Image 1 (spheres, rainbow, N blue to C red):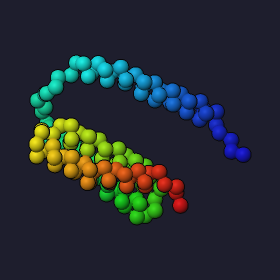
Image 2 (image 1 turned 45 degrees about the horizontal axis):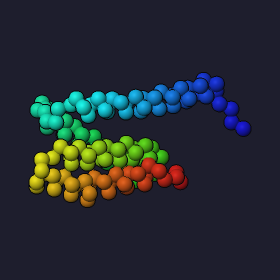
Image 3 (image 1 turned 135 degrees about the vertical axis):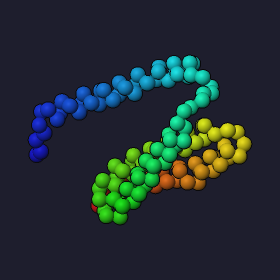
Length: 130
């Protein structure tokens, strides 16, 4: 029988409640944003934002690969984070693209590269450690 320290038992339910509450609170906030955000906006540092995201993806993909090759169980955590970033990247690529060739390219990259890589990351993230 494994004994768990009392403070560990208390913190998990509190954290679970906090995270669940934060998710619920975001729903009305999304309604506010949907009604108040402008449909177009000029953004400063746009290239920096995208380069930063791609740098995070590069680190996540390479790091996950290295950890996976070594058989390190931390590959699961890296894969989960990287998979989430890949889905986010695909979403923003598609939703911020101009109609026409730019949108077609974004959809093709999402369907053929980003989402399949995210699915691979999901497989790594959810597999049982050996």
